Image (cartoon, rainbow, N blue to C red; front, top):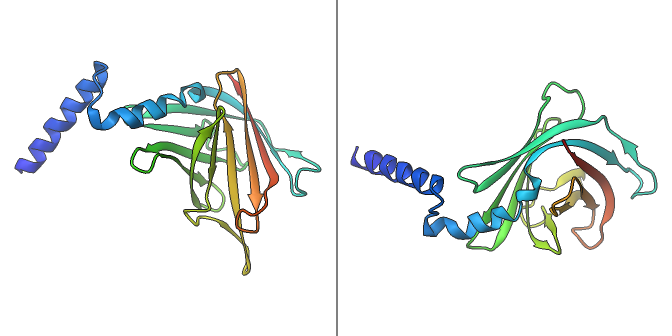
Length: 186
């Protein structure tokens, strides 16, 4: 019981500290890292293109609206579709920063296969580059091939930004274009 009361008191103190802009020491590094993703916050119109032939031709999916918002005292950024009743392929994503391993993590869950992919990566020249190679959450293509993905997420402050998703069927030795996501600010 004492542990529960102490936990509630610490939680309340932490919430007040964040609200007043006084970030607890243990939260400063992940908070600062997550603020680098601030240009992603907001409501966006999303157009997705898919290529089944390594980028030679592209098919467009129906336009969708998504929202990015901070959660958990700005230590997590979530992306969710605004029309979950849509019959087109959709995902929800959760971004965080691991201050001990100095890496961003992205958990992506889709509404078709129900697979949660875990990506890890870093920001390089205004682009968050992350793969699911380390986590092993690759997509089984057949009994001998697992498809990995590399996300290239433009996080610069712009009314339009892109996420290019590449695929690899050889464990990351080579990468080919697979999806383009174009986000337009609402």
